[in-house]
Image 1 (cartoon, rainbow over the protein chains, first blue to last red):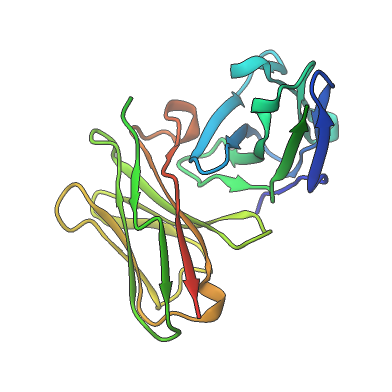
Image 2 (tube, one colour; image 1 turned 120 degrees about the vertical axis):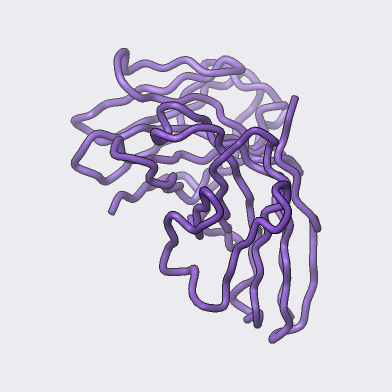
Length: 114
Length: 117
């Protein structure tokens, strides 16, 4: 079964700093990869997703993620964070076979301070 | 924008009591899910539901849990006799299409926080 590891539990950054959140998955086959964000008091929202093609995926709000197959990684990046990016970020994976459910990582809490 | 709605937002219950968490998926969606997140832990899949029956369930989804779509709009999760370890945030999600994640984004509700005392 697939699993997802997010190594950073809580990241604190100043505004305008660059962000990289790590995500590694374990599954030998073809995967679909996702980053979801949960702002305080709100529901999970899709930031971006990778199915195939260009391994550098651009999402909403200036986020991007790079799929590196050899490293089983799908790290999330943003060149310059804002206070409004304060949220919990979840990496998730599903396999390419049928309607398998999403498997989530534990999440990384990002706090952006002025 | 259509959204998944969940009620209650927070429920406190005594151990051993029955709890029903309610979800209204997006109206033209066909696939429904429950996930939960215990504080400080990962979001875990519980169950998926399609065509009025469970299509997949995890090990967590034991006999104490059940799901129902009683009236074509609500999708409920029932915990028959709650335990302390059932305290968690429960998320409902829905998707419109089949074919896996490729063809349909999963839309989540805001969650229902269950506290079992």
